[in-house]
Length: 166
Image 1 (cartoon, helix red, strand yellow):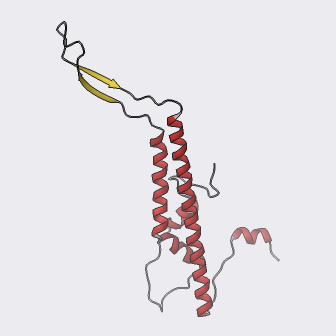
Image 2 (cartoon, helix red, strand yellow; image 1 turned 180 degrees about the horizontal axis):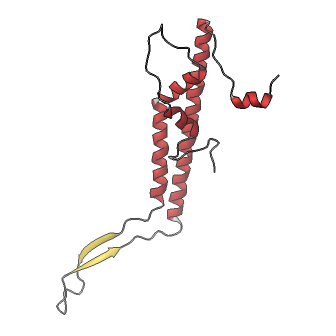
Image 3 (cartoon, one colour; image 1 turned 60 degrees about the horizontal axis):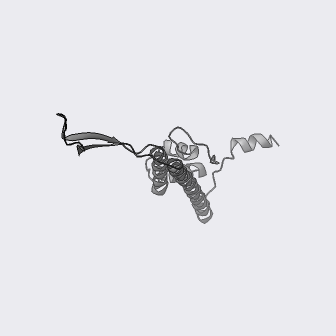
C-alpha cells in the first residue's frame, strides 16, 4: 500500500524532508526583521518541531523492524556431554548446532505485522506534519489579523499555471 505522500531515499516523506533540509534562519532584531511569509513560517515550524522529529525517528525504527522481522532466528551452538561417553577414544563432549524452524508461516506473519506497524508510523508522521503545517498557517493568519499586518502569500505555481492569465 502506498502513502499519499511520496517518500524519498531514507524513507522520509518528501514534504517533511524538504522542510527539514532548509535550516531556519538565525534570529534578528525586531527592527531589522524581514517580512515573514506563510511558507517561511511553515518551514520554520516544521524544521523546529520536536514531535515531528520524533515521528520521523519512529518511522525509521519501524522500517528497521520490518527488516529484522523477516530474518531467521539465530542459530545456537552448544557443547554438550557426549551420549556415548567417549567410547572408542572419542571426546567426552559434542559440538551441536541448532537452527530453530518456523512453521506455518510464523515469519511471514511477523513480517506482515511489522510492515503494518511501519505503515502506521508513516501515517502518523504525515498526520503530525499536516497538524504542524495547519497550526503554523493558523497562527500566521491569526497574527496577521490581530496586528493588521499585510499577509504575504504567493499562490502556488501550479495554481497560477492552471488558471492562466486572466
